[in-house]
Image (cartoon, rainbow, N blue to C red; front, side, top):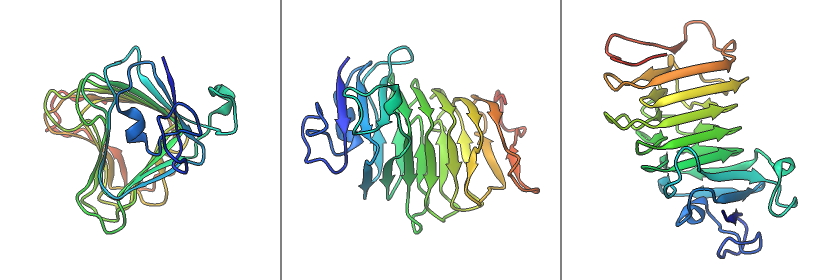
Length: 243
């Protein structure tokens, strides 16, 4: 197990200290192994013009790479009291998280995909199946105001699989025709505000036709969703899908 550091305002280096911190998360993840810790500064504010794909080497369910937002002025290496929820990672295009046979745990990261003018982009996790992803205290924003942009929990490919755990995580939409597509095994728990902002899709969560998968929601408060909107649907085409 090794510790690495990420700070967008750093000079850049091998990531072994805050002074030598990586400037981007993609650089930090390259070459890491299961059990490594990647600490992202509380004031990290990463902007990317192109699409992003975040992966990690094999670590899987039992030994994921950990990516956590922490107070840069706290302990070195950080301890639980240093955890924060303010790191920002933005892409003007799509964001894909997770590669085959990998495991990544994210804590306190705010991800934003797209800009107002962007169309037909996806926010995908996992990007490739057979992958374990856990997100605690994270938010996912679709900045595009196009109705063709969607979140994907799973990549919508038959047999892709993947397990996604969301704990106190919320999604924000930019258009009422956007939604969260589900084709992985998803466990979403303990979230007071699962749908952020004031834009509510017609149907927030939609299974993919004939792809299988499951969606388990525990301790989510959807009471703010206005009448005329649906949290989810399970149509006849969603063969073998379970909610």
